[in-house]
Amino acid sequence: MPDAASTAGSAIADVQRRAQAAWQWLVIVFVVAAIFTAYASREYGRSAAVADLMEQGRTEAILKVALLRAVLERPRALPLVLSEDRDITDALATKSIADIDRLNRKLEELVKGTKAAVIYVIGTDGIAIASSNWREPTSFVGNDYSFREYFRLAMASGVAEHFALGNVSKRPGLYISRRVGPAAEPLGVVVVKMEFDQLEADWSDTGRPAFIVDRNGVVLITSIASWRFMTLQPLPAVRLAEIRHSLQFGAAPLQPLPFVDQQVLSPGVAEVRAILPGTREDSYLRLATPVPTTPWTLQYLVRLEPALGISMSRSMLIAFAALIIAFLLIAAVLWRRQAAAMRLAVASQAKEELERRVLERTEDLSRARDRLQVEIAEHRSTEARLQGVQQELVAANRLAILGQVAAGVAHEINQPVATIRAYADNARVFLERRQTAPVAENLASIAALTERIGAITDELKAFARKGRSAPEPIVLADVITGAVVLLRSRFAGRMEALDIASPSPEVKVLGNRLRLEQVFINLFQNALEALEGREGGRVEVRVQQTPAGVNITVADNGPGISPDVLDVLFTPFNTSKERGLGLGLVISKEILADYGGTIAVKSGAEGTTFTVGLKRA
Image (cartoon, rainbow, N blue to C red; front, side, top):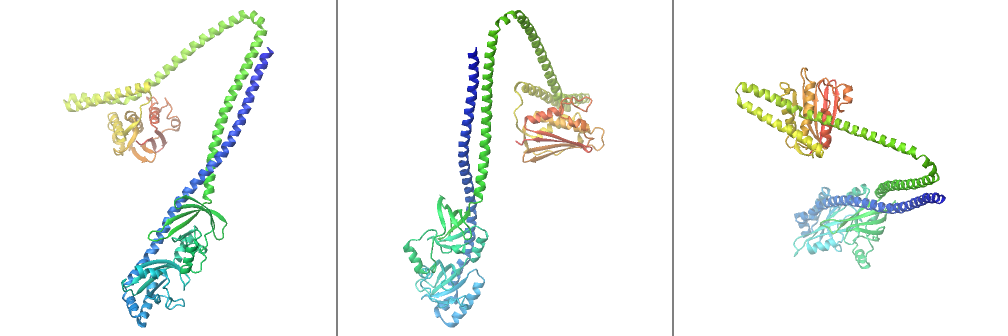
């Protein structure tokens, strides 16, 4: 026997050891899962934030490109018009002092009404003969521009656009040029210089760096002044020498922009580390968007912080919350399994202990055998009595259920039977008057109501056999009309109190027409009965569509419901009527619940309002 006890004790110790090992493994798995979750959620949060910022940045970049195009399109038409101007052609042809003076004054007045910085005219030798800034110390008149690309290209092809640093004004701008005269006998070139100070100021106000680069990657227009004429990447030595020789950007060193650790994410999008003036090194999204009708590209920088940190923190918080919940569930299951194993081990130990005691006291049990037999007989008798009580309880429960079903059936068919009686009485009167047509109509109505009673009993039998009927789309107006038809005979002379704003046939709800009609019959009947003997009684029925479904309100101006009854209004067999069963509203609530609907009531001295909520089909 001591061996059995030691075996049971070792079983409990084994369960404890396995439980301890399981908890240790759970902790290890949790730590590994936490590390993986932290990494995965951080990466997901980062990718989600980058995607959002990328989409936002693309939208803003497109808007900036649209604004730039609008700024460019205005001055582009000016050289075309001026190339045909008579004063310009006369000044280039004659080069007389009077013609040039007249042209200077004209250009001076013209530039005031445009967005152009300077307008000037160059002869075929490259010397500027007239300019809108002819009065200023930095006048372009007399300067040689034959080396400028916009002059050479205009003379060769007729039109040219060239961004460069002014060799006189030392201000950057876009030079838009057009040849004056035919290609065979050119007279010169008219040039309009466009500067972008206002555009750069507008970009600077947004707080996000934006700049335009040409096909060589040189920054032309920028919201950060110190980045002007810097490059996206180091230029080849040959190309660098050509640009410097052309004096396109003056003596600018053409150094690369302060971008490091560039990583391409998708076409036109890269993540870079950059140092903006007055700030520390930070991460940005660099989005490249071509500028139509130009060889330029808009570069737009979107700072990743703090959106990146917020998104990663949110993702990690959600992921860790889910991880903790999952592991709490796992821990609960593990604890329950270990508790069950411990209970089995303890039970096994108790069983072995019991067997040991039984073997030790065999003699005592033998002497008490007769007494135990008597006790067994008593237990059997008690068990038989318990079984009888149980059968009686089952029978009582069946009777209670049968009573509820019978009351429900009586309440369901009460209205159709009352209507049939009214139609039968009317038919008898019409027969006495020998009016057969109304009699036929009443008999047809009685037949329809009889079918309705049959449908009600079929519905109840189907409910008892299969459960609730499945919902289907039904026209709400038909439901309300059917309920009114069943009530018309019973409340003859009082139906004018019903003020129904019938919904359109397009309003459909989910349910069963027969069962929903019973709901509205109960509500209309209760409202009309509440108005009995009351002057100016009125029942308003309104339908309102909401995002969640359809609400139907039935409001009367009766005396209202007492607070005692209102508290138990939806409890079975509670009613304030002398002949009422107290099941109408209970059944109505259950019918609505079957189809996901609701019913609510508000009552006071000014009347009672029931609100029925149904799901829209």
